[in-house]
Length: 265
Image (tube, rainbow, N blue to C red):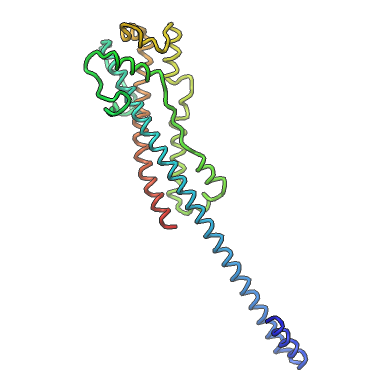
């Protein structure tokens, strides 16, 4: 084909027809430019198609992370709800004569699932097994941490910048910010659980003391410091249980919207 055009060009030059030769040359240049533009467009389309496929895969992995986070929040919600009802029960059995006052941010007393940590409703009378279980979980803590590896990869690869749904992108980023803001202080020394553990030790009680004392409520709650910390646990755990419930609702909608967005790709 190249030889064919060269022969035409040579013939036009030999016949001394510069105008026709110039038209031919311009036409050949235009064809080359058009060919280059078409090739660039095809290459650009292929790159965009690859980016969208990679975004789809990344969003799919992100959805799996969010579903796991949702399960973790369900665990955190139940854990803190049990702690709230444990303290209320211990206070009632001790006969403190007053209910803990919650900060407005803590919300209402969370509902306790009967399939949760105790496996049944809160006893209405003195129950040594429930008391031991209560102190056991009041001296433990579940740390909530969002799974961030997929999200970090999403950002570091530059794919998040190509995610066109700005409203959905903002909701994703807001979710991770909310988790960090709400739960980032779990390991601080001011955490009521850590304060309770230190107070137990300072008062000469081992963590397992509740299981061997004949009257654990009377002995342990007779300490004003322990009672004060338990009241703080009610407030803190009510807040974390309720915020976990809201996080679950938020994640359910976010996951649904991400799945719908991925179906468009």
